[in-house]
Length: 484
Image (cartoon, rainbow, N blue to C red; front, side, top):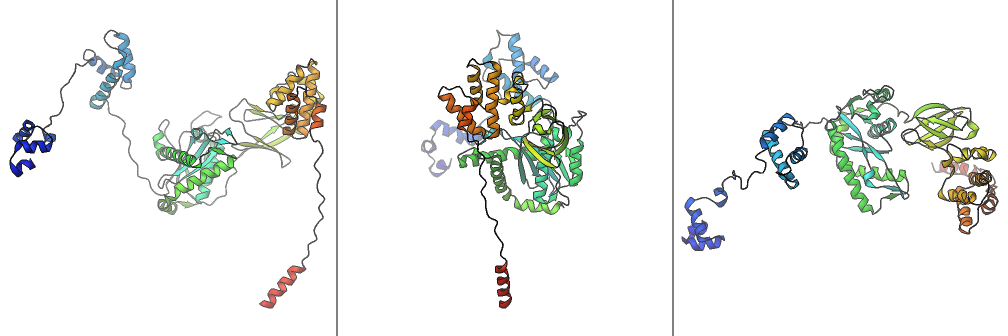
C-alpha cells in the first residue's frame, strides 16, 4: 500500500512486498491488511470420530466430573473395539479438555494472600534424598526441617532423619533463637510431629508441641487436612531451596562430605547467601516481631528403662544393648532426634545412634562377648547372633572355622575368643589379621590373631609438673606502674 501510494504501479509494489499481483490487488480492493482479513476458524476440517457417542460421554462427565478422560476412553474402547482404536486417546483427551473448559463444572479458585510483616512463621519437612549426598562415601538419606518467614521469605533449615517432634522442636528453636524474635503465629501442616497423638490417634495438636508453643509464646495454627496450598510459602520455598543446593553441588563438583556436621554447615552457608537478598524485607519482619525472652528448651525426651538380663533396654519400640555391668539397674535415656544418651548416676554411660520406626534392634558385641565366651553354647541359637559378625571378614573367619571339621561348639568358642580380642583391642587390627590368615589359606585361631595384634597398653608419658613462677608478672606490673 505504501509502494502504490508512491508510484501507483500495483505489480511493482506487490513484488516488493513479496506477493503476487493478484494478491496485492485483492488487499488494495478490500483496503485491509492480511491480518485483518483473516476470518475465525469455526468449521471442522475432518469428520468428528466421536460424534456417535459424544452426547453419552458428556452425560457421564456431568454425572461424575472427577472421571478422567483416559479412563472414560478405555471404557469406550472396551465397549466398541470395532469403532475406536488406541491411537485416538489423545484426540479424545483434547475433546474432554475442551468440554471441561466450555461446559464443565466450576473449578476451585485460590486467592492470593497479602502477608503482614512478623505475623507468621511456617514450618514443614522436605526430603533431601534427591540430592544424592554421601557422607564418607556412604549414601546419606535425610530430610530438612525448614522454617520460613512468610513476609520476607527468609528461611532456615536443619538436617533431620524423620518427621519427628524432636526434629520439629530443633528446627523451630533454631529459627527463633537465630532471629532473637518470635512471630504471632506458627503454622505447620498436619504432620504427625505436631498434630497426631500416638496415644489416642486423634488429629489435634499433641501436648508436647503445645508446650513448645506456650514456652515460646506463639499461637499454633495448622492447615486443613489435604490442603497443602495453605502452607504455600514454605511449599514453594522447598523447590527453590533444593534447586539452589543442586546448583552449588555442581559448582562444588562433589556430593561427598566428610561428616554430617560438615554437610549441615555447607547447607547453612548456602542458605545465608540466599537470605542476604531479602535483608530489606527481613528488617520489616524483625521490626514487627516480639523479642524472644525465654531460654532454649532441651531438644530431647527423657525416659527411664530397666536393663534386662539380656543386657538390653527397650526404647520407643526398639531394643538397644548396654554394658552388662548395668544389668538389673534403672537407667535414664535422653532420646534425641538422631541418638540416645544412656545415663546412670548422672553420668553418661554410652551414646547410641537412634533407630527409626519400631521392631528393630542394635546390639554391640562388646557388651555381651565376655558372657558368650563363658557360655559358648548360647551362641548357636542366640537371638541376635547376626550382630556378632561386625563385618564380612569376621563372617568368613567363622565359616572357615566351621568348615575345618571341628565340632560346632569348638568352632563357636574359637570364633568368640577372636571376637573378644577385637573388643579388647582395635576391631580394625583384628580384621587385618583375619584377612592375612585367610588369604594365606590358614584357618584363623585366636592364638594366631593374638600374635598379630598388638595387645600392649599404650605407654603414658611421664611429664614433669611445671612450676609456675609469678615473679615475671610482678615485674611487668611494676614496669606499668612506673610508666603510668
